[in-house]
Each structure stands twice: as C-alpha cells, then as structure tokens.
Length: 358
Ligand SMILES: *Cc1c(COP(=O)(O)O)cnc(C)c1O
Image 1 (cartoon, helix red, strand yellow):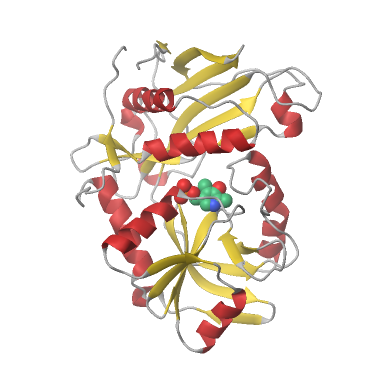
Image 2: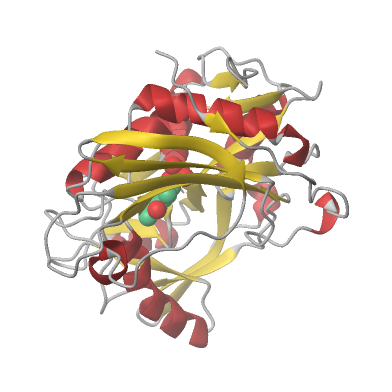
C-alpha cells in the first residue's frame, strides 16, 4: 500500500557550508524530517517538512513516564552514488517490538519503509560519500497526551530525522565489568529500545569513566555471573578461534548488526554460537592465552574493538588489533556491502527509491 505523505520542501538548503570531513557525531541535521500523529486509533497527519523545532505540552506524557522508543540506522551511498539502506525492514519490525513492550501502538511497517525512502531520497545530498561515513537515521515515537495520569498514552508522535555522520574510528575501548548496577533483567525492558534504558546507564557509565574506562560490561541481574552487553552495543568474544555472543533471553537488545554478524560468520564457515558466557570462562580463556578478541557490535561503530577488560582487580589485555581476524573482517564486510563493493547475496541492501508521489 502506498500512503500519501504531505511534502513541504525547505526554501533554502542548509547543505552549503557543511564539511563532511569534520562532522561531529549527532550534531548536524539534514533539511527535512518526517512526522506523523496517532490520534483516535490511527496514524494521521503524515508529512515531510523542513527540519525544525515543534512544540509540546508541559504535561506531555512521555516526558513524565517515559513511553518513548527509538531506532538507529544508516543510509549510505554505493561507489556509484546510489543511496541505499541496510535491512530497513528489520528496524521497522524492531520498532514495533519495542512499541508492544512499552504499550504503544504499532507503526505500519510499510509506512515506515515508505517514509524512509521518501525522506532519504529527498535529502540524498546529505549522505556523505566517503567510505564508512553515512546518513544516520533516527526514527522515534513517544506518547504525546496532555495528561499526567500514569496510563498508556492515547496519542503518539512518530518522527524520523536524519543527519550525516563521519566514519567512526574509535580507539580500542577499555571495559569494566559492572558489579553494582544492572542494565536489564528478564521480564524488564532490556529488549526494547526505550529511552529509560539509556538514562539508567548514564550513572554507571560516568563512574566507570572516572576510573579510566570507556564502557561498562553489563552482567546478568541475578548473579552478576554472565556477560550481557557492552555500553549500548552487543558483545562478541573470540575464544580459541570460535566466536561466541550472549544468547538473548529477555535482557539483551537484539541488535541487527549482531544478527548480521552471526549470518556472515555462518556463511563463511566460522564457528559461532549464541550461549550463556560466564565471566569466569573469559578469565580462564585469558589465562590459557585463548582470549583472542572482544568487540562490541552496533550500527554506529559496526565493530568497536576492546583493548582490555577489567574484572575486579584483574585487567586482561587483548592482542593488538593487527593480530585480530574476526572483528576487522566483519567490519570490512558491512562497510563493503554499504559501499556496494561486496556483492549482496542475502537481499540485505535496499536501494532508495524515488518517491511515488512527490
Ligand atoms: C541499538 C542497540 C544495540 C545495537 O543494535 P544495532 O541494531 O546493531 O544497532 C545493542 N545494544 C543496545 C542496548 C542498543 O540500544
């Protein structure tokens, strides 16, 4: 089904004067945004308009009780300059999985996809061409009722805006195994990309930074025995040539990068499994000289290599990045798919269509 999205173009692009080579992350926004309202049980007021402020009521439900969810994805251009998306339908589905957990309405997947195509097509000039750079896309939905009773909202706003981001070359990160605070627990909201999860992570992350670490490793909330995630990324280990990542059992955000990595590894015949991974197993592997790699996986960085990991008073150093095979290979694969230099054999790449009704 094709939806009619009202289009108001900006009178003057802000693109002139943007230097794609010196982009700070998350501070530059493209010309247009998509907005929609959920009123009386349906999505309405579909429109793409110039990026800008909008006003909300002081009692706006989401600001008080946190009914707010988001996605994070990227558009890139291939070597011929054609804009493309990577697995957009996975993001549409995950947005709705988050919505269901937070007692929010579904956003139609086909409308999500259509809005993405129209918005990215319109602002295609904002997609940085250099390899590893991308147009970051931020879809989000929040309860917009003017009401301060604790109950599910009846009205919602869905917004998608975008902004160019440079290649992300983080230096290898230093991790601290967190043994006081938890990110998520089975039965909680750890599987939802919901605002409060990130608010809750800020204090432990700040305390870890004060001690000289970049990120915390989140542990299971019952025993602090099994590793779960790192910062806002999924966690991968390479132990004795085998790749392992924690099995998502309700407290782990199911990353799309993570899912892609497991598929690529399987296709390449590299042993990879999802299972419970105890911190003791990591310590043992390190002692035996078999802890080859640790990395985080997520849309922003794709792969974030780990320099060292500290558990209580033991700091475990990992081999130099030059000696690692799996993490760097996975990053090359994803960047290559996004640049069109590696053939997409899985139907993951979706070329951005020109709008049907603009
Ligand atoms: C978004 C996110 C990830 C990574 O998901 P991707 O789909 O790969 O970007 C992992 N963990 C948390 C907590 C996240 O919010």
